[in-house]
Image: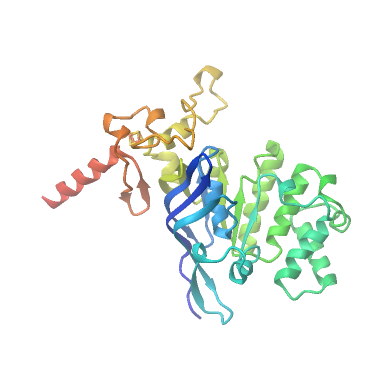
Length: 347
Ligand code: SF4
């Protein structure tokens, strides 16, 4: 049997721009990313940093006036003959047959607020069976039974009754479970979860996270988890990519990110997590706001908020520095360091 590559999706220099009357917004500004098969990658950053747009491009569902302007999204899949093939999703027609065979079937997505993706006009059962029948040969009755089984799997009580309910009759937690059931209906290879627990209370949030980890093991799924909550990242992720203003500023495994963060933005994000033992005065929020996307700062985009900014940070755009096999950072503080280290080794 042909062995599939360890990397499920490889993103290379991906750029997604929004062309508006006010100007061009570079929502995703040249990112590189490896999503490993069967692992959980967390994409972290404040609102407006481009993480959701980047992930929507994996399904070719970037809203107009946004579009992929360059770069590659190389997805390794099995074709109809069971052989491995690499598809560049960035090149696929958003309305074409190929992306429709991937979207929802091989790569599924769940959203922050399920009411935006579940229709209030149809029952939960109708919406789950629609996905199943679109991608499989199941009959109406078989699909209906599959919907009940899926609702049972996501711990919804009395699934045979709930399947007939409309989404607006369910609580936030139940709606999110129904959304997860819908996303799992075709046993996807990869699940993209866009802040799926943000709108929920902490108890429901913990339950949903446990459920997702459990289902990931059962289905051997790859999970791409978008969040601004580092507490969630610590619980769920294997690898972490930190985004700021359309760029990935730091990337490594979860232990390195929490124990040896290098980028000043990652360090500031970690410092700003509230701790139970800390009094209110000791909270250390990141100063300033994410800049207006139409007026991006020159040089390093983080320089107006960075406690370690130097004069050259205003004009020089940092390159990606490879600190070791599994740790990259985009900050001028490390560019010389690596150069000096290499010179020392060369002596
Ligand atoms: Fe801060 Fe300069 Fe590094 Fe940017 S390049 S994160 S401004 S030190």
